[in-house]
Amino acid sequence: MELLWEHAIRPEFTVRFRWEQGDVAFWDNRATAHLAPSDIYQTDFDRQFYRVTLLGKFPRAVDGSPSRAIRGSRLKRCLMSSMS
Image 1 (cartoon, rainbow, N blue to C red):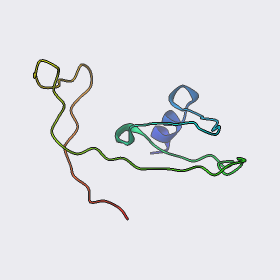
Image 2: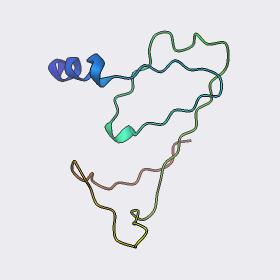
Image 3: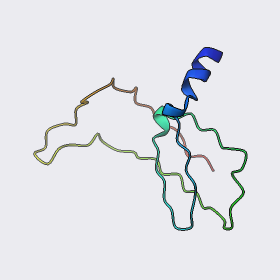
Image 4: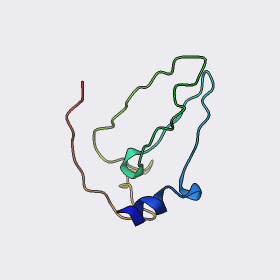
């Protein structure tokens, strides 16, 4: 596991986002290892987070044809109960 972790945290696979008031960030948790930096609370303003989970049918193109993967493999479909 250590080998995989050391590979995943290499700079070319990471993002460091410096928050400024009014910023918005999106990421796909299906392919994300989230690790908050140690200075996460060093801002002059409160940050607000909203979790959005999409449910429903798979997207379709304008002509009605089903969505298709261009690259990669299809993920297993799963539903999760909301976390309160």
